Length: 281
Image (cartoon, rainbow, N blue to C red; front, side):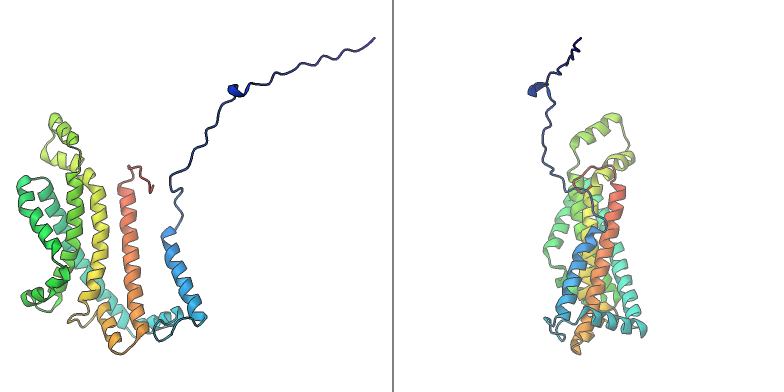
């Protein structure tokens, strides 16, 4: 008796029956890296340290990072640096608060009213065209050489970008949202709260970041004019005595302040505008 083995052939699926996997190019930047904004400064610091250790940099012109750190420690121990840092923070804080308030209020008045736009927008554009630091001599004559003129100049530096970007965001709100609010019979307050503020927030945060940076840029100049304290005054005194390490201490502190405040604004922006789906998110 012969055993017969039956083999069942499984037909191959035709090539056209297989699901086609279409290759798609990835265009987004990808997942956000943790502490990505620190990578560039850390690389720059590493290059600076390596060049100093190799003797490629003149210590008299650009001291090594450890020399600058040691100088910062001495200045902090003798009480000079804490006093100057606190003074600079107060000036920047007062000027920034005034500039932020003025920029937002003027943008709302100009963006929500044709009469306000006629009175405010042209004046702000004229102010923007005048170099702010060129107003320093005039403000010294008006306000004296004390703290008031420094805070006023910082406020002007801050309010201009806040106004411009907030006003641009208000002007860019889709008119269909306005028509829908009118059809729904929303009150003026409700319209501002539900339509105007969400629509203006992206531009406002751009202006806020520019204003934060501008407050530090204006401060470093103002503190070298008729000042007796502050980081700018410390750097100006170090220039007279050729203390490059002290100047670098001041510049690094300004840089750290700028980076930290910008990161804080970015974090707040990301939380407040979490409903948006953007390229950065």
